[in-house]
Structure formats: structure tokens, C-alpha cells
Length: 166
Image (tube, rainbow, N blue to C red; front, side, top):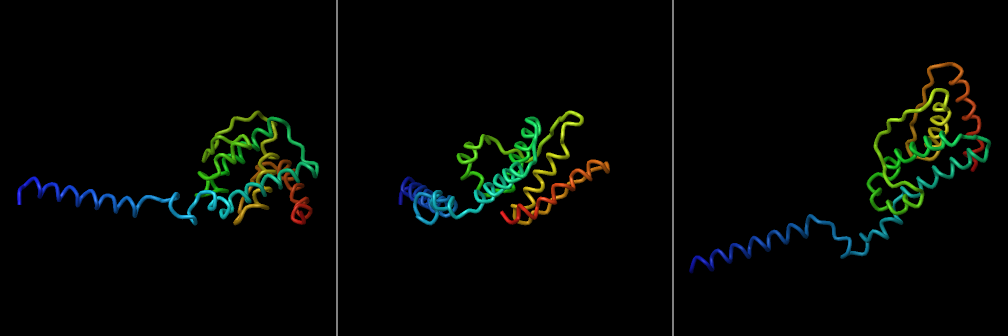
């Protein structure tokens, strides 16, 4: 057997092995119906969780919670930062859906400079309450260092009875 034929046989065997590895490792969304992104998108609960959070925030606003435009920007940033937790592994399938809400990026952490007496505690309490009511395993905590802020934040949980009926 000539050396060229032997080397060609080794090359063909290696190509076949690499092709088999690619078939086993790479996802094949285009081959099988159960793995189509459209079908997976309907089966995944992240979109329902996100809609529940938005609906709960709107119920808060309907019940009389008023936020200034600056507070609304902070609340929207908090919702953007929580998208990774809400969607989990299915975030990539819902990027186009999130863009309809103006969410083009999903940071994992926020650093916010906010003016003194701007309503940080109130905004934090509203978004935390909405997250606690709508997200699975919603274990959140909001701490206030001063008694007056803690007292004001305690008024929002009184509305929880109305929202849970929603």
C-alpha cells in the first residue's frame, strides 16, 4: 500500500470522526420539530413571568402608587437587571420580544447615581413587591436604615391583598 493512500485513508477517517462529533455536540434546531425555537419559546415560562411582573406594576400604578419620571427610569432599570433571572436560559429566545418593551440590554448588575431625596426607597419597594408577588421563589428583601422610610415602605404591603386577588 502506498503511503499516499494510507495518509488519504487516515484523513478520511479523521474527517468522518470530526463530522460525527459535530453531529453529537452541536444543537440541531433545524432538524427536529420538538427543538424548533418557535416551539421552545411557547413552552418556556419566562415570557409569562415577565408579563406578570409588568401587569403587577401596572396594578400598583392603578391602585395609586405614583412615581416621578426619574423614579420610573430607576424602576425600568431594575426590571432590565432582573430579566436574566426572570428568563434564565431562555433569554436568548426572547431578545426580540424584550426589544418591544425598549429593553436592548440585560445587565447583571446596576450602579445607579440618584439624587438625595429622589425616591430610591419607594421605587425599590414597589419593584421588590411586584417581583415578590409574581416571580417563583420570590424571596426579596428591602432594607431601610431610617424609621421614616421603613414606615413609608410598610404601606405598600397593605395593597398586597388587593393585588393577590387580581
